[in-house]
Image (tube, rainbow, N blue to C red; front, side, top):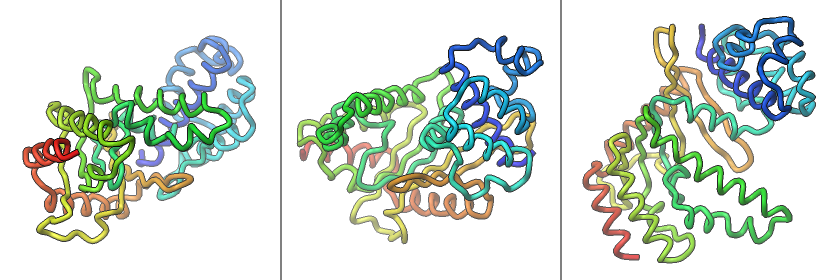
Length: 287
């Protein structure tokens, strides 16, 4: 099974489950509609079995899902059983960030490069609110922004599960210096960053302005996610690159290798974990 097949099935399964729960059905009801056993619905939602376009269409129509959502899921389903259909393109689903969160939840390892802003899963709630302050002030639907804030806080639980992923960060010094919410908020945020660096599954390295080794493209942020693939010879590796309006999910091996090489260059140029923690604490005291 190719990388794109496994990832597509995982994403389709998550969306089918989300749509079923939104419609208020238990698994036995769509199973009856499909003329299948409940175990079939369970395997589809877990991404454990081959998915067909007619099955996706029947289920989404049964759930009375949004037509645009259905079209996106059908587009993804058409590529789920064919090699290369998902390589190097952004997800077909309307809410691309749901796609990222699904992958983040499933990941065994996450490697994150960031400049300017502290990564979302390391942010304090006050920092999150400061980042969203302008959007909150201008929004005609502040409840939607509040939902985004709550969701970001909830996402951080991925670091504290029974079997959490190993998460490593390379943060530009600009992440520590760029102020959101004023010095009080930033000081608390940097102290929180230092505390998170002490978790057994979290490693934080800082790339200082005066790094001894220059790395071209150091300001270019990306995330590498490694997802376990039972029954497959190797884990799945995906590069996630976010832009202003959408994102790309890249699983073409040659393209992912370039991001892995860049990660190695950055970790070699950055301060070590212990030095980085000290650097962060010193930055906090300078606020």
